[in-house]
Image (cartoon, rainbow, N blue to C red):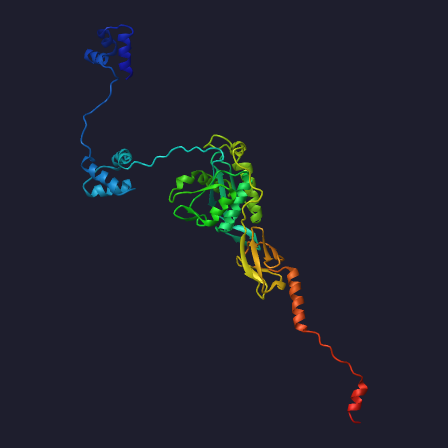
Length: 399
């Protein structure tokens, strides 16, 4: 290549004749004339020969069309049974060019969101169980969310996938971010999705109280929640390793600090900006949170048994024994459990909720009241006895 360029330079730039060029380079005059007449640089070429793949090209194309996802190794085995004697390299190179033609891959568009357009939710499951006190640990879930425009994220720890726990997580995430988006997005989580792309009654009521829309993602479409999947991967690799938690309250505190000081203040390569800064501008397009968020307590009505205890989540909590036989409304939140008498509105019980298992919690006031009632029953009703002078008995008994 270098000599070809030098021959053309000498002849066209310096005006050296062909005879002199042949003397200087030692090349034949015919070779020099060919180099001067040619428009492109010289290339090595040889006559094409038949490929060992030629007899099997149609079979390979049929295999790609009929068996989705078939591997190169399996194709080589099948055409080997039909006489293919070539190597692996030539087959892999041919399949690399043929697959996009016979089996075109799915294409994607770049998605952009308006400020405040949507907030996507999902569940993240920590690898290790969460300490909950009394020497016990428990499997937990983190309700995670991420705004489409700013990519600001938040999370809330819960211990079940029932709707009242998910509602608590959504309320906490919305309060952490500080505004209401236009649409809440969920995948087909059991407590959120009723089937056929329709929301459950509880989720629809939740969105109605917040006056926001909802969107249930299509089944088997993991790409539609790719932003949150990247956040989950960041949680797995940056938040979880080498951390210790005293209890579930400590876990939530560390999680909030991690989102505030690490996740939302890093440079996000997807949006080429810092989520916390974009959140400031996005909040201007979002509606303010309502004064009262939708209720996330579990409510039910029970009748106080003769043994005044209620059981929830394998734990027993005492009730005021004076309400035995009466109906009370049970309200279970993430922090406390209360019972209110339906007929009078009196407080029948209030306990701090415990996430440990198989424990009994007795309010000292309930125990004192129970002992007082039992003492009354033990002694029975008071009986007045007439006291007579002993002289009357002496008169009745003969001497």
